Length: 395
Image (tube, rainbow, N blue to C red; front, top):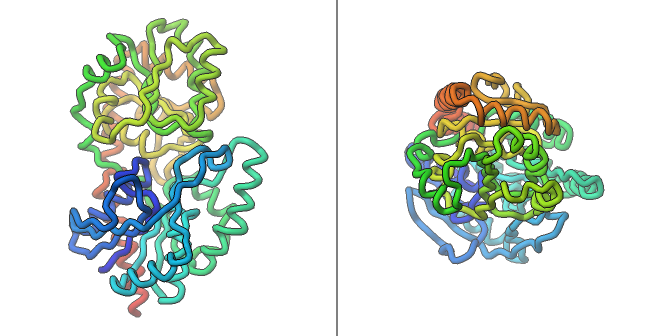
């Protein structure tokens, strides 16, 4: 097959959807398929790059100003008068059998949706992020954007949608009903090997952690993953484990957690690492006693990678987060209700004070990832769906 992979986010830009789209694109190429990647320019990455069996074209882009509406996130857009013509030329030269889009609110997704409709090319769309904001006035704006901008473009190409978890399914059914051609449940895939074998001592020395128990929190800090509940759980945690540290590993776009830490008098226990290169993440995981990044609702790539490394995870999430895959509290993860600060503190204390429990949860979590979330398994499920879509087009 000839597969066009489309995502405004792509390495060297960090992020869950960026790394997953790259991993899948490389996997498609390794399986013998021709792959063209269309993405947004980022920093000094080359405009055209050929590596790992991929041809990567980075289109000129501008950065969305950092505002509360944009959840203070560095989002690049490629919109300009020549975009549609450039996308059409690139895709006509490539002649894709299918298009795999990532991210429903990106202009490259919209541009390729128009192309897909005009040329009759089937599109598979992976939705990584829900357009939501915890502040009511911004939540209304995002609902409006979904209704007036995102959904109309989806109507045009009627993509099949990849459903990564039950919360995303509920979101899709609420926001995009009738604007797609079906849902395909495929969880986030992770490479269970690359996160293993890190040098935790290097991280402990870098951040002067000594032998303190470490609550690692991986991922960019944005309103939907604000770490406020973790900070509010710290006074109870520190009452039981006085030398515990909360190590936040990710770019900080939303600093409310730091304000809460100062107000609660626990700022001495909070360490911020800032943005960390992907190749250093295994070191941070090796330094962790437990991982929890309180992703609003649901679980993402960072949680799965922590589990793959054998780190016990405390997650404010539902046991049925992944359709058909069972998360068992106290067996392969420690679960609490979203928003339950007391429950979060209790689960963190259990992981920090009961080494046998923590070890068993880490082992069981690691086994679950290898069995149900390995990138190979997820890759081949994507290829099954893409092959079916390409065959239907030929018929």
